[in-house]
Image: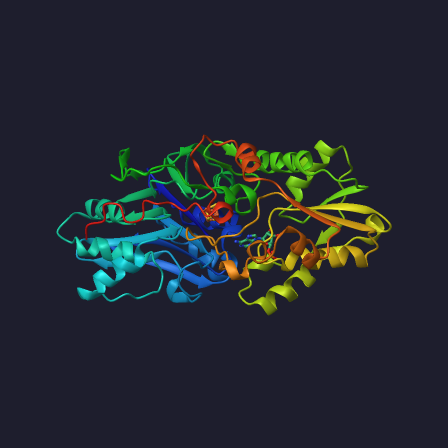
Length: 454
Ligand code: AMP
Ligand code: SF4
């Protein structure tokens, strides 16, 4: 998962500092690397680095560059290694001019395209699937850059929310399935695009509308125009996990408030699998909003039973299992004054490998809880994601390895229950046939090979 942000100033005002601020608000979408790009003197330039935005990019440097258009990216690798070479935006200065691109999502046909292009002499600089788009453009060097980009977009499949910078234009594109969010905003003659609306709030921009699935929006000095990728998907695939876990609760995706969706998930959990308890606790921060919904529905008090060290990042982000296990210990501390002698129901958004769940149940018992009931605000994650979220293979997914009774024992809870897929869809409330549930249901998109003629 990654975050993208772009800005184009109609009146020439510098925008790089806005990109920097926008990336700050998208930091939860990726902590491995960050970067921004702009075009200066006909050449695409970048500042990129590993780690968090403030480590990767010098704010002082950014403020002194007078670029009127720029894009930025925060990366959490799901395709390609975690190295600086793969940090985005990616840039090229090819026969038809400079291009910078930032991508959120995973392409499902990049392997085949890469082999095809390598057979014809292309040399890839990174192991990221995003580079495929630049090579497809360069392969069409007889076309103008925007036409070459449109041509590339019609050949790729899978998840892509993109911001692209050409010599005199900013372009935002969203795949025809609408996997990842992408929203347009505006403030005082500056047009913005962002993975999430929370970053528009950060720069004081008003949300204008979501980029539609299959839409390409082109911004230049005099106009904002909308084009279509000529690919007809069978149905939509907006990632339901964005509502469950990834997006910030203060974001609105395709008109749906993430906060409301999460609270609904908690309410449905309380209705679907109620349990007698003295208090409700949320796994901070991922389970907090669902826990509020659960507590409201169950009429049971919500307490801060687990306190989070706010200076430690998301544990899952750390690459190795060893680091991940240590990460949970330093991140979460149970609160004995709340838990001692109490029956508690703990809400988390999801169980992936099961590390967090078993650790937290243990911690709660050691802090004096008499019973620990675990309630999960999403259906069991049984299948890997191929669309830009780092879920492990089925062999590592706790819900694929164990049935419910085994898993309850494995994590050491007195009881464990999940919401159903039907509840998930109803809680989010998107139109029918719009949401992706592949990691829960195994129903992947079937349009992969459709119409790719290289
Ligand atoms: P685990 O300990 O492997 O079961 O991870 C579960 C925790 O990681 C949950 O509490 C989620 O908040 C979080 N999580 C779920 N899916 C992901 C993901 N794909 N990337 C990062 N964190 C995740
Ligand atoms: Fe989101 Fe799951 Fe679909 Fe991946 S498989 S896009 S995580 S809903």
